[in-house]
Length: 210
Image: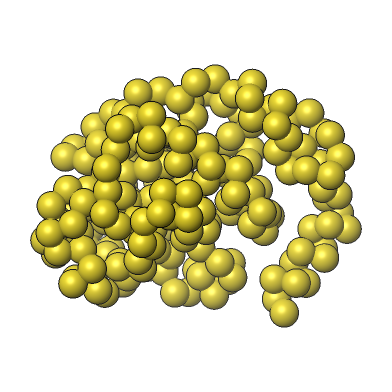
């Protein structure tokens, strides 16, 4: 009921139109998606390789992620997930299980959905892989937006995650998914938790760098 109300308010004040060219009836049109700069090559953040669907210099992707997170535009998980799946395929990444970065339960209650889980479900559908909520966010961390240095963000995220379903990750190659990566503190903390639970490899995947 809450999401239905949010969708109604969103449609009332922000009629559906392309975030790039304002074409009516679609949130991201095919022309704008095709015009996006090519995805950058994967990069490592600590021990974790990160695949990005698009460059951090794309205002369109930044705007799309913001709408997905803060304006209840859950429909954006489909085109953004498609971009992520394509980037993972081009990078030659092989995984056994897809795991989304979880929200803390209090934040999930406020937002009503986890944008990383929506993206993970879309990529899992395309890749034909299982999607497992193997992580639990046990520490209510401060927002990473504007937190400061990488060291401060790493301290903010220390011990933030625990494993809920270790049998689903032990010995598996994990594709760990989130919407955006800034310093990599969140992905690194989650990847460390998965490796402690026995994951053989963890690869991060995001829409873009922050």
